[in-house]
Length: 272
Ligand SMILES: C[S@@+](CC[C@H](N)C(=O)[O-])C[C@H]1O[C@@H](n2cnc3c(N)ncnc32)[C@H](O)[C@@H]1O
Image (cartoon, rainbow, N blue to C red; front, top):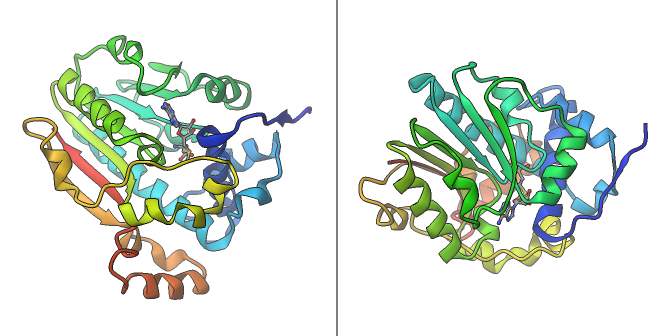
C-alpha cells in the first residue's frame, strides 16, 4: 500500500508527534491508552517520526494526557448521553473510536482543512451522528452550523498554546454562549512553558510557534457568566504517571519541586 507523504508544516505537523506518542505507548506492555489505531495510522504515513524526538517518557506522557481527557469526556457522556461533542484540533486522534459513544451522541471532529483531508484518507469515520469538519477554530461558520439544542462538551487537546490568547478567549466565549450547558476540557501551557518552547523538539522541529500561556485557571472563569473551573491538573500530577519509564519518573520528581516548571502545563475542566 502506498504510504501518505506529509507536506504539513507548523502547528498541523505537530499532530504527527502526538499520534506517534500514542502509537509508541500502544506497543508498551503496560500501555496507558491501547491506541492501536494510532499505530496503524503511523504505518501508513511516510514521515521521519524521529524528527518529533518523541520516545519513552514523552510518548507515555502524551498517552496519559489523552487518557485524562478521554475519561473526562466519557464522564460527561455518562451524565448527558444525548450530548454534542466538539473535538477540536482532532488531528489524527481516534478519540471517538476509543470512547465509542452511544448512538445518541452527536460527535464533531474538527481540524484545519489539510489535516482533515489527510484524516479522511487514513482513518475510517465511525457511523452514526458523526461529522468531520475542515475549518479553523477561529472561523465563524462551523460553529453556527452545530445545532445548539444539547449539552455540549468541547475537548481540545494540544490546541490552546498554538492560538493567540485573544483567539482562545473568543473561542471559549463563542462556545459557552452558544450552548445551554456543557464543559470545556483542554490543556494549556503556563507562561514559563511558552518561554521555554524552544526546548520542545516536536514544536521546534515542526517550525511551529506557541503563543498563549495561562497561569491562573480562574482567569478564564470571567469570560462567561457561570463558567467555573472544576479541575486544574498539573501535568506533573496527572494520574497514571507511575507508568512512565524510571528516568521519566525521576525527572518529574525534580520538575515538580521547581516553581514555574511545575506549572508549565495543566489539563483543565470547566463547566458552564
Ligand atoms: C499538537 S497537535 C494536537 C492534535 C490532536 N489533538 C492530538 O492530540 O493528537 C495540534 C493540532 O492543532 C491543530 N490546529 C492548530 N491551530 C488550529 C486552528 N486554528 N483551527 C483548527 N485546528 C488547529 C493542528 O492542525 C493540529 O492538528
